[in-house]
Length: 395
Image (cartoon, one colour):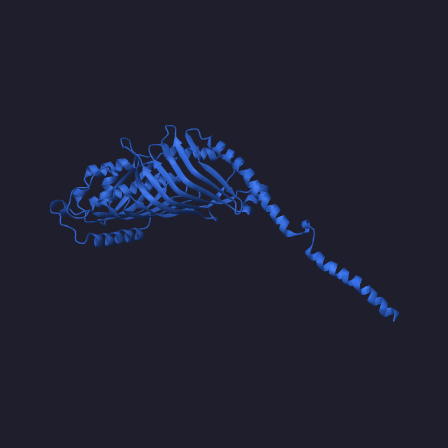
């Protein structure tokens, strides 16, 4: 009986101890709970972002002020932590005279914390993705070449950054000329992506645009990792209205009873150093030779060749009446591949319009006949141009 009584007397204390252990699991000190540490981490991240944004803003403005011949500025800078993203709003670049050269409504730089840690601890080049929203590029005189050369020198000595992917949304390319009241939009609604290969470092740019407002345009540009290797390009323009071409050149279309004609251009070229060569095909619908007189073609050539780098090219016929070969040189030869490819694209478009007139039969000058079903002809012509440009390999 004594042993049983002792067990009964000890049982309450044993129950208390067990109850205390169980309650201790729920009522741990604050420093042993995950939630307070999570709140503290969020507070530190928020405080770090608030403290880091002014420092990053000061560094960015000081770095942009080092451009000697151009004035670069932006409206606002924001930094986000998860994931790490830097956002620049209202980026503008102007020359010494105050003329706009480049404008970006919103520029986003995306990366990951692993890239940030590798760059901080190991000194490795971080990998970033860029999102460029509503860029506006104005091509006038030597400003594009000077800006590219200055940016190249500005980047020397700074930490290398590997840009894996660039996305361009709703961009415009304007072309200005002496004597013109304002720059005219050559390409609008540009949507493109630039992806760099991790294996060899080459880059490929694919995109679409509206050329002169109505021309449905698609393009592909290939850029090698080394400037010694050739760059390639493809351009396809369809349903380009003659009325939009006249408006681009500050003129009015000829008065006609029928709907304005359309033309299509397909080109494929190769750029080796300062030499550009390629093939282009043209097609027209509801178009007569008198609609594109030589003075109009010369005005178009002058307008689109008003910005460096300049292309001196010559067009010659091939066995196909609708196909032409083009070969020329780009000056200055030291210009970067990106700008030279853009100038080559402009040159092939101009020569494509000229080739469209040259491909018209002589009977169109003597007794022009109204085109039947211009929309249907335009559709078949554009398809022929695209098919022809895909068949012919780049020279």
